Image 1 (cartoon, rainbow over the protein chains, first blue to last red):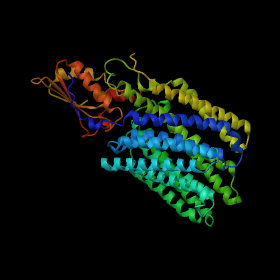
Image 2 (image 1 turned 30 degrees about the vertical axis):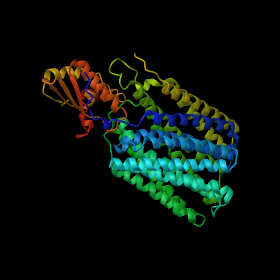
Image 3 (image 1 turned 180 degrees about the horizontal axis):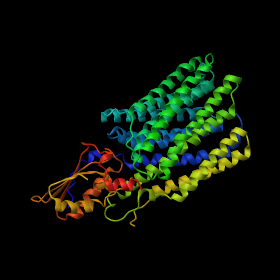
Image 4 (image 1 turned 60 degrees about the vertical axis):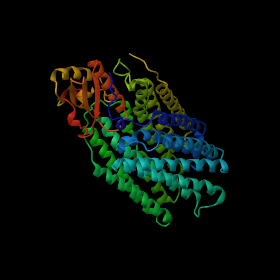
Length: 431
Length: 107
């Protein structure tokens, strides 16, 4: 006889119906991103300001990175803030708006038609991010738990809002000449607010909670995390200030880079301590690839130091260095995290949907049995080789490396999407 | 393991069933994970009262774990009402993991 008498308000998490569409959208975007990478690989031996490269960057940053993070955040923010998500309806509206906006914007870049299609794409995206910001801010406010992880999340969403606003201004700038300085100047600004303010801040805020949780580590150090938060925001503030005096004080651009390097180093130390003090000795492949991604963060930073050094010494912008830098961020660090974390979160969401009332009644598969581990391993190998070969292709301007790297990235996306659909289509079975 | 009870005989039977409830992320049963705080039995009203926690509030697996606790106790004590009381004070901590649990995680 079951007397339903437990306080379910503590365990009602965000519905899978809200989260799964973001994951599917992200997976399809990754596939499209790698198809575009394959069909446009030769463009990576030219200048970075190229319609196809802009299209690839935006499908990767918005369609892949942002959509996956938005979806995961609707599940994880309640864990971080110890409170319910403010509105699932708002989350669905966010999905519809950004889901319409991204293809419009990417198509506009690809065809380099920056008229109404691009503007509508940008408007939809800005509106979607505004709804997301309201949802997250209200969730944190309602929970009353302003812990460091919640502060990281809120800070990152505010930076995302600024990023997309500047992005929209850049779209308008193609037709109205709104901005007083050179267009490329604002492009750097827009890109770094997004990469550092949105992706880096959010991933550190969420990762600093999830990594010890998944490793069952007793390590926690809020002081270090506050230091990371202050360093990143200080770097962004310096970056915004220098933006107006960039031409006169170019040497000072090292200051935000050093601050970011310090923040990454401290976060790396935090992960290392959490890893060392873990109770769970056996680490699964998904966590391994996520930890590898933390280490991979060093690559674009080193590349950025090279870019600035070349700029200081020669006053010349080395396009292949900038392209490698961008590639290592979107196809390297960001993709590695998502490849790992997808299979650390999605199988649990689907398992919970399928088995939450069945698991004690008979033996059921584990959540990690919902995807094919052999395919996951092949995907990881294909990804790592693809990343190294394509990045070498950009640096050396070798078409054969670019083509081979792009094929391996495409294979990675196909294997990834195979496993994502395998998880999502899982039906209840008893062992 | 330091779980409060008012009926040691029925307690062992309940624990044996609760050990079938596995945390799907950690693969450790919820008893050795330290999620169960108290198991009391009201013979007059035929009721099993389980006080438990989760590793974190709003744990994505929380609904599944609490549902399974109710089902496990229902199977262990047919004819009894099952009352699962979820608390977060005191919060779960790693010190609550049993020796067996630590051994399992350290493998």
